[in-house]
Image (cartoon, rainbow, N blue to C red; front, side, top):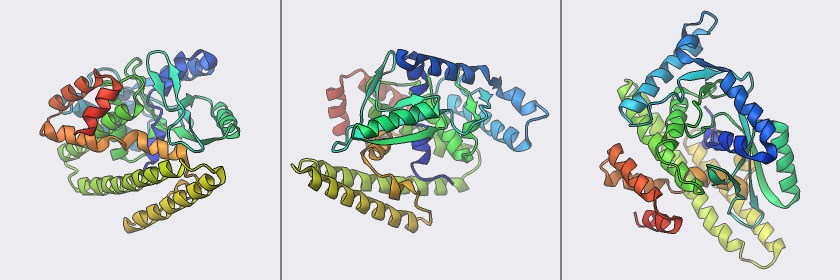
Length: 345
């Protein structure tokens, strides 16, 4: 079982593949990486039927085939060629992501690209290049996180495959990420990462519950909801920490800010440990060793607005067609109006 928030960071490069592919300053490495992914695609049906395909992988791909059809028939997600092929990249990650935030600010650094707009991360197909940027940003005084990315989406501009890098996840997590990525093809707002990721997470969560029930895996719903409950409690701890840090960062002395920041992050780590222990789960190392402003940003991107989207879904009596229509209407507003509408939900 991977850590809570683990696959969130692993898939945080939702549009990085497209973004880096379009960005001139590192166009060549990005173009090569995207081409490699596309070149290695094979239809899932052919991979399943190939004699050399291990039985375990074939069985998991069958589950994904069924879930992909469910996403169309029951969740109203796009019926296209995304996630109908498989690519074995023969490595552990498809991308490496860099996320950075100033030492005394919770606002992540943003990078802007054609088509997708501005996002709070920078993705590389080359790990060394990602770590070089991370080192540079660290020297410039930023809090930095560099991590491997197991899945990403090009928002339907390419026919994204299932990747071997995703297969170390459990079935529920594999299907959840597929639902999440497909949701980005329903609604995507340039320059508003928090909106996009929270919306896709809401679709993912309602989709997983319905898929498990439909697949006759009702016994797994309780475990999934327990994990979701743990995530919600952790997010409440993160939200409280952010409020305290915002106050701390108004202090005038850098030494005081630095000390009290470290104390507050240490407190967050301790509080998280208690939650993990209560859930009989092991605390991931980075909750102890790698907490900083950038790490908090990776958590907030995916769930910061999630309660608002759940409220909107409830107003639609859990009807996804209504929900998508309401979210599409929100996406047409300017950011201030959109944020105000969400705040009032």
